[in-house]
Length: 360
Image 1: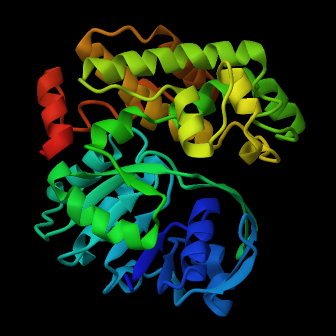
Image 2 (image 1 turned 135 degrees about the vertical axis):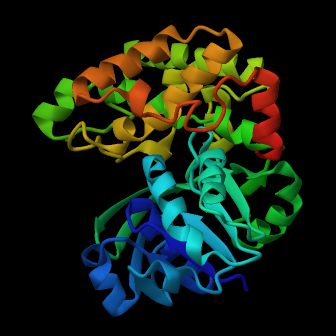
């Protein structure tokens, strides 16, 4: 069976490592902070609750990256998207021919950024960099080595960069996670980034409640009221308009909820509130969380930037980025995943489309 390394031991990384071990795979888990995974390093045990109930054994938990990825065919990167660049720089010296790196998820243009950093670091190995459109689970970790999977998504789009590697990617992921569904290119995974729609605006519009209750409310069911849903629908509309300008037909958020969770609704508010997979998921305890620190700079900023190239207005998206920047005292437009950082500055829509399909 394919030997797997999971990079990142947060909620998602622990859930994925435990789940893959439960499915019988040889799994190593890497985290940069040894203290965070000390209990797992000692016991090599991850307890899964929720959709799957099991106590699983992984092969290795370590803060030594070279040791973690050695002889591992599949490397599953499960860290916030703002850490992709750092992971790419650190992993570059240790990569081996034939390895497949999947960003879970890539957010917008994650695979492109990751591959660019590897090339800047002189990596000439025969590897595949791919990105998932979303993370396969809704999950939370209560303690190191104890994680709850609220829901396993029915299907998760995934694509390789370049797209010519999709067939090779498919052979591996069909064995490991059959929920992964190959789509034509990273245009489809990047522009169908639904986290960009659901997370930042909901957090901004619930900022006072998050700060005064420390997130003691259900993020989706209580945080998304009919009025908040109207803002999300406008963000979704702008996202879809940008995607269409690059020659692809995106899924709307309502269509995605049906695809990923098999839930339906007459509008976005109904569809979200019909999704039992979101029940019990609490809001973040502070504003300094990935819904702002990841989804604003690594999702909304690149979507806005691509829109400007194509002449598509993204007024609602830009408003959320601006307000989030004021709240966090960070210029996300400057510090986010900009076209300059992606190596796409002064490129046309056709040039960008080609690069995202075939690579630099």
